[in-house]
Length: 313
Image (cartoon, rainbow, N blue to C red):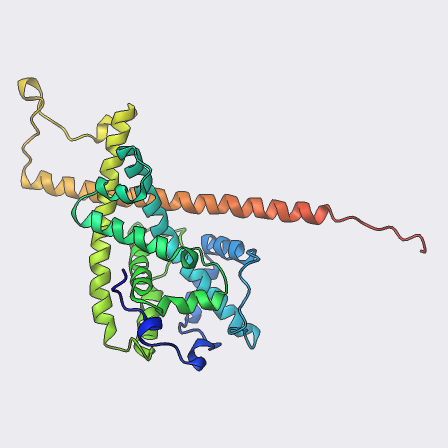
């Protein structure tokens, strides 16, 4: 990742740009309303709002409440976008660790093949290098402007936008926030950026698509690893196993017709989507529990405030 473009090294920010009080992104009113109506996204916002280490730095003090709310909204969108892919990476890492029986982080990629291994290695380096940003620690405005700081963060946001689309069942309402609009928002920000400019989108989109395909392979192979580990532990659902011929050739796989192969591919695609949804929904469920716990702690603290009785009244 050291060879990736980084504007701080090749194109330092001017003082005016570094201390801007205006976010490089913009959210349309209808998209903001949709996010306000999404309970899962509001949970994210509540948890981040309670973070005492997320004060604005001296360079990004908002001039008004409207600017402050814009920075916070864009910070929260960034955080919510990163959550699913970080959860998928953690689950893939856990499966690889169990399969290889190793805690050496840099050996985990050996559990995957081809494009999946490349995607896993890329994500591993990214989450190590950008740990603070992925956790959205610090000044909200710094978190938001960091998106355009280097090629990897731009690529990550672009991929996560596309990933959020694949997490939804076609024709069904989703309880997860929808960030389809953020793709065009990101493109507009890049087009208007003095360093990246309007010609950069085609290049970064091609790179993001390659990473997205690698992540799809990573999800597919993670499903396979999960099945393998389940069989190893004796709790595998044999209904999901590939059907084989009975008799003397029971160990020989069935020869599938083209129509059977197509059906199998569709089934596998559905299984991969369900795996992603299960992992990501589990993440959101944990967040809901954390938010409920935070509310209980807040109420407990308020109830424990001592009341002073006046003897003069």
